[in-house]
Length: 147
Image (cartoon, rainbow, N blue to C red; front, top):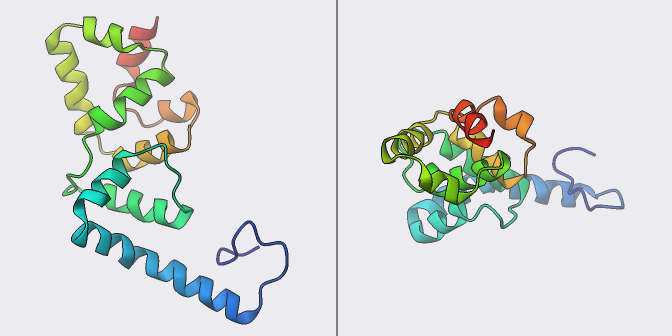
């Protein structure tokens, strides 16, 4: 099955179905850009809601946007870090018990992380901790806290 054929398709697609799918997929990048420009609050809510499924190509386009150093629609320490801490078995109470300086350092490291896009996709797709270990800027601190 090629990329332009939906996974739920049981029968072979006709040429016009494949062409329609191709146009749809090609329009996703511009649609993500239009949502961001014309409905910024919707875009912000879409990015910060990591539990609601998105069509895979739309998810890829949003992730591509999150690689930009100019994005400001997501604050990783508020959206992604709580989910990441859960993966490491850290309760919010444990985090709150840390000294303010240590909490600030973890938040800053998360907010300045170059892997926000990868983290966003990993948290959306419930990645295993082994995958998160490969990119999480706070993984050493989280492992220390979880023991």
